[in-house]
Length: 466
Image (cartoon, rainbow, N blue to C red; front, side, top):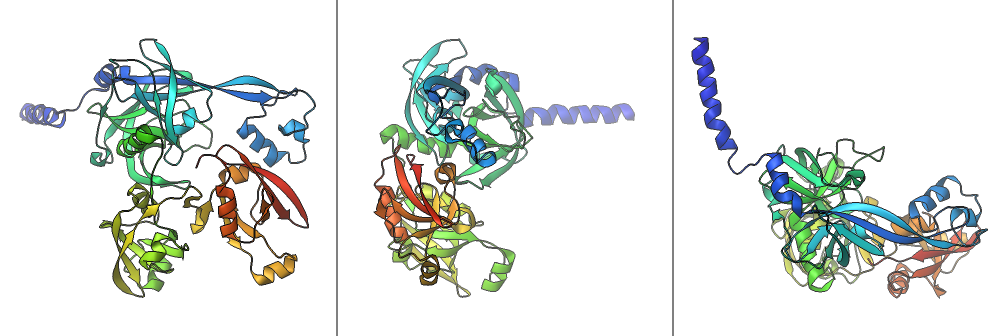
């Protein structure tokens, strides 16, 4: 009887395993077939170093000293006034990428090639090429680079929307510079939103990813690329079981725009939004917490022209449900400017329909920040000073810094500062700041006059390409 039971189990596996394994390959087969299309990317950036040995161009080190040693002399921190002469030295970094066309187009992360003076690509057959950066998009962290070659091995692209949570996936890359390293795991979740990222519905995995894996491919077990490994969640700087990949369909849409003109065109609605909590849903009469709550409608925006109001809850965008507030920026950003989009909103206890014609996301109008604050170019969320505030501060102009992130935080601008001028242009309103900062070319610095406490100081704010 036992023999019959074992025979039945064996027969069951003999039938079911091939059925489950249809079109699914072994990891070793995957690496053998697709591995040659994965490349190692090394970058060189010339940074300035002072006599004391501290890199003047190392933003991470600058931030460390600003945070923990604020009283240290400027020259030691890497600012002007150092004791010794500065010299340029090469700073090197490594990442990964993968070939998407036989004529040499390669996808990687934007942060891998950011600020690089030289980008070198190394293939698995040991050939090396100097690459040209075609374009990079910081908001999605996608970059396209190009090498001059032909008949190159190229990856197959898959459909990340068909990924299932629990499905096996594998990564190939160069963690810590160890080229062509293979790791594997499963899909932990889909459509993840990260606090600083609003345009990417990340694929979360438990695939071991470490520094150097950035920009490498995430494969399904059919040997198709479904994502670009981009970030890890870590308290130590190394892998801790949570990794994130950019879905390949999002990356390819960005890549097409970069290849065709180097510019990313995104839809713009013009609202500041926040999450709908259980208490807010109850107060608005919603059946459950969902949607994106409009806390502010920007002046002369597509949203204002369409009739959106503060306290509206956007429940659907172009027929797609908005479950979380973080869903909306992705949906809007992926839509083409000029498109007429139907919205379903919840207003004063009733469902309503509105149509909005999307604008194009202005350069100075960045993604929504924490707590629904509108982040402007330079990484600042600003608010107007009320009459009482101006009287108390004895000011007749200026705008209040509600939040400082990215470039602004690195420059030393703080929440609570009051911006009085940009390049000696008087700032009396948020609109004044928008206009003044929009005139600053990417890569240049603006002199920001700040009131802090009882004193004033100028802070140089370097503007990136956003």
